[in-house]
Image (cartoon, rainbow, N blue to C red; front, side, top):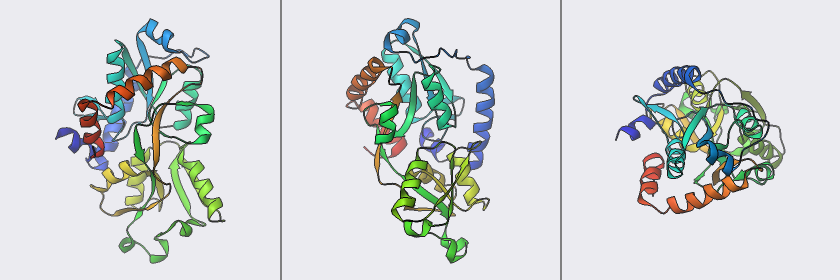
Length: 278
């Protein structure tokens, strides 16, 4: 199927699509006023426009031919359609910027997977879980580098430098992992690139290690067989969307709709198309 192929396209095509899409999008995208505070359901319904921030990657939001596609994109579009709203989509690679935009009312919802952790629940309202995922280490296969460079267990992360997208929620997990192994794991935050670019940099030998979502890494591995993603960084956990603490009615509406929609054949087909499971 076309969507399945788009998930598995080569990383070079992904990079070109990202650059072309983002620049065109930023030229044409509506400028969101910074209101100073988040909106709740009644404010959104009054305008009839839901403002959603998503990460641009091969699962959440990407260009498929001349249209947009992605699990989270199609899901938030379906939610808005059910309420008679339009969606203003704003792609942003920085998790920190998505959080900042949510805090000042630039966005109403962060509509891509956020790990459900106690730390994030203290500052955000998280929806019902959407998927189960985990973070993995991306490295080159042991046959392609010195044996001392290949990491087979989390204990061997001591003293290594792991590259992550700037502000990624996985940073907290890496720090906790350093405490668990009683040694330092160095973190290099990369501001300009997303997870797929980091994977490509590992594959081409520009960096040695990156940490990213297993689903994205697995899709990329189809076109980059030189990478290894067998070492887990996190345990499998729930991922959800997020709204501001000042938007409880929006959260209730999202949860009620998601609970209903997740029981439908349309949702199961959408989930299967992007995650390959029921």
